Image 1 (cartoon, helix red, strand yellow):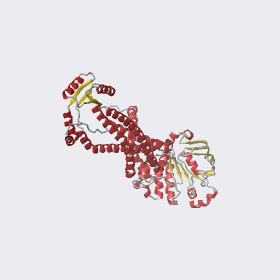
Image 2 (spheres, one colour):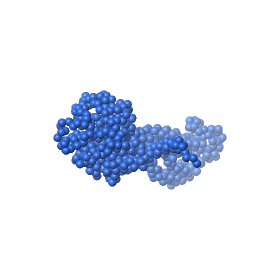
Image 3 (cartoon, each protein chain N blue to C red):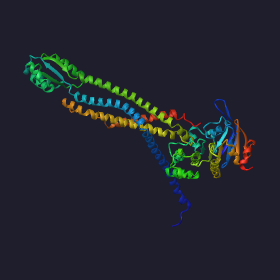
Image 4 (cartoon, rainbow over the protein chains, first blue to last red):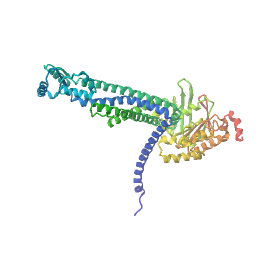
Length: 327
Length: 235
């Protein structure tokens, strides 16, 4: 084989060299970021008490709106359970006979705006009340069944105004003493939930601002304590980005750490509440189970918290690092 | 390498720190800059480091018109210039090695290349065996040599030293001067600001003298008031 001409030898090598140079620079940039990130973390861990306090403040500020959000989500799931089963209870006159009552229930069930009906005799009502309330003995003392017979009407209509007009209709019936729409509480709950949702938003914004200020202030102190180093770094040719970098990572760690601790706090409270909620839910014969933040919301919260950390760091840095110049 | 043409510096408070300064330093030249405190030495160094901007005249450093170096370009400009400080300006929260490596890390060198260069620089100043120590554990002369290693680790074209022998006895000063000599011999332009008249008298390098912001002499002669010190050199 003939020896390669210099051109043949150098051409591909030149291209390789260029590629390697770029990759080398990228590698060293990545390596530098990794080191700065770890160094920022080491610095935070070197002063565990102040760090823990800052992280805890952030965590508490984050867990308040997040906790409220979890409560709301659970309350909504309860209302969803019962929304479809809005019902009108017709309490019948005491002089209405059982046969009459059953006939009425059957008639009402044929109406278009009624899905189905259910007749509860006075005896059934009493038995149910005894079983659920535990006041059975007391009722026996009375000697006489104080409970009326009830026709439970399940409306076919789903919205609450139509259900309300159906109730007014049924209230006119001769056998009916009192017609009660058991959905008013759903309406009230909706109103409360709506209020709660707005409260979560307002609280989130307020406390996000608080977290931002905590991070700005903490980083401002960190910058102040490293003033000499910043001056030297600038004198030996450190760019603003280089000076900024460790503080940006400090902000990132605060955001991340604060949010992880907040998630832990919420999970702990949920775990602590789980048993009584199970008991309560069993007493209501409900399948209800407490649900947590969920993966999606947890992730969004983590993301938001990290962004707040970075924004706070950036604000603190741009405010203070320009002011620190050699001279 | 360093070219001052009619350079003036007037501070915001109206003080004229430098007035119509003209001089030129070639590549590999070693020059003293002297004058009483307040004569303008520090201001001149600050102009070269772009810590301050001249209020008049033209400065060319490392073939760059300094007026054209914008704020965001200053870090890259400073990487061409090594600076040695009187108070060393070392960081006591890290080792000697990490102090010297700082300019390389800033410039984005890979760890292996950084290690090679840092050890070469430390070897040059004779502190290779101290790389793992905290600089606070070193003597004043050693700290100054760490400062010099940091100033030259990035192979700058220009080396500026502000009172590098300020707190050192003559023997240690001679060691430091030897180092500067060696750097100038490999082509680094070295400018040493000092009011150590003994030091100036012991070497016959070019001398720039400042007085009240004016350049009153430039050359190899020693002014009369330095004559007594010449005895130290055996004249």
